[in-house]
Amino acid sequence: MSARNPPSARAAELRQDAEAAFRESAALSPEDLAELSPEAIGRMVHELHVHQIELEMQNEELRLSQLALEAARLVIWISISWLRWAIARSANRG
Image (cartoon, rainbow, N blue to C red; front, side):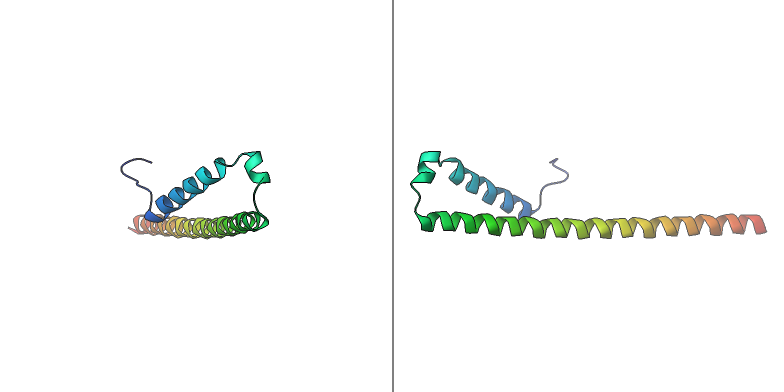
């Protein structure tokens, strides 16, 4: 990211959380995984499911933002087209 366009606080927080989770999971070797208790495995599966849901929700937010952006661009395009038509019509009248 450039200095002109810093990441939002939410994005920075999500990045920090993801890096912390990665450090925790990266520290587990296959032998360590085999030694995990069923409760620990259950917690990890739960965390993965929650993370998957978070990603799906973020994806939906991005999709809705994209639709809003496309709608805004369409409104601008229509406004500019109407203005050009009005100017051309005015110029042709007199």
